[in-house]
Length: 203
Image 1 (tube, rainbow, N blue to C red):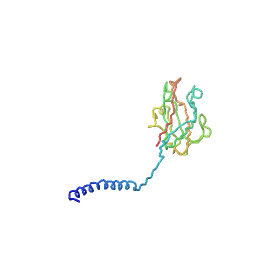
Image 2: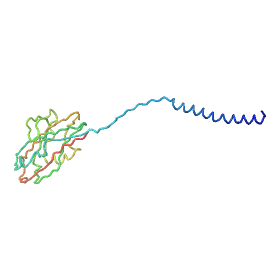
Image 3: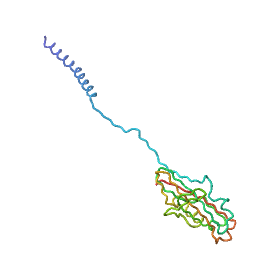
C-alpha cells in the first residue's frame, strides 16, 4: 500500500469513529434518563367552610307591647312581657341589646320606666316559668327615653351573653314598663315607640 493511500484510509477511519462515538454517548444519556429514582407524597381534598353567627327570637313578627296591651295608660299603669332569643351559630359570639326606631310625643317616653332582666324559662308574651340568672340578671333600669338615646347600636349595646357556638343557646328577656306615678299632665294623649334589637357578632 502506498503512503498516500494509507494516510487517506487513516483519515476515513478517524471520521467514521466520530458518529460511532456520538451514538454511544446518546445511548448512555438515554439510559441515564430512565434510571432516576423518584417519590411523591400529596395531601388532597382540602376544603374550607366559614362558621356562622345566627340569632332568632320567638316573637313570630309580633310586637311585645301593642295597642291591645299597652294603650289608654295612666300614671301607675304597668305591664310585663317576655321574649326568648336563641343563638344557633357555630362561632363563639357576643350578643348585645339596643333600641331602634325610637319616637315619642308629649315626652311620654320620659315618663315610662323600663326594666329589662335576663334569665331562662318563659317565652314570647308570657313570663310563666321565667327565672332570672343567678348573677348579672339586670340589664337595664331607667326611663324608656334614656334607653332609646343611650343604647343605639351594637357598639354601645347592653348585655353580657356570650354563646359558645358549641350548641344552640337560649336566653329569655323579661321587659317591664311602668308609667311614672308622677307623670305630668302634659303626657296625656302622648305616644312612645321603640324597637328592641338583639345583635350577635362573632368573638
